[in-house]
Length: 442
Image (cartoon, rainbow, N blue to C red; front, top):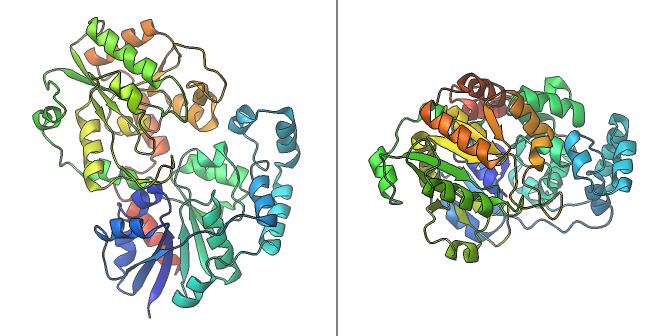
């Protein structure tokens, strides 16, 4: 009997976590299983088919229906049903803070979810359930509307639903899940506790898997040589390598200031060793070409591909991009950034991490502040591990770059603790765990 699983790959993070890990191969390891992948456009289908072309992988292009009427009401209400340190900081008005204080309670969320489920009508996915008769649905971004539309249809048909929380900040930083899946998969016990506290899920319905996108960090030892890695961008392998990971222009306004500062300090030989600087931009952001033209000396990586001009979700990193990321983490001597999940990536490779806790120009608003994330709930938990060094001035930056370049073992125990808390599993089998868990539900 053929068993069918629906998977969503509307976002780059979904494809990275499900297709480019052992999740999908583990599912397909069951010869009776097939996977229907929902994506946004024929262009994306053609792109993924070049790499993932198993005959039991079926692609469907779905254009989610517009959110209107009661659907729109509940889509807006989900933001007021979450109250955390992070959301309190981000709310710009007293009225929204009061609404959150009033509504963000378990019994209110339960009542709202009941009404949301019974009152909203959206049959965008009905034809696919009739066509494929799935046994399970895996949704990797349940904080957005297309997945909620699919979840609603599955619940109404009695199909087993699994939600994968694919980011460490979503549960505390944005909104609640409008509807709850039967089971949830989370990276670690921290997010498990948050799902219980803020989404009211039963502990027995939450499966802790580890981070599938980090599996290759623990198992893949096929690195480019230092000479080969440095040669491509024209860097000197005899020098220490500092990698700066920009926050991204949608999250702050200080990246170019810090890039210029690092290059100035390098040119003034303020660091304790000769260094090269590599700027690694985010795959889910867009470069400001005018700023690049001002800096012909800049050595940078701009990984991934972008399917559209929409920042944040329409991107992908293929196998070559991911290998280059591993090479970068392996060969660098130090990571410098504002608050970033790259701090965890670097810690897995036991590379010192400096987070910038100052801005050279006063931000125009709190939303444009690059340092605000240190007060966010998810990042405060990461900082408590002791593996990330916050520097509050140019002088401190110079001091700690020097210390780390001289002795990379400083703060090693803190980095180990950070990896243990955030990754939880370091056996390289998180994707396999997820795949086996889903198969066990079928």
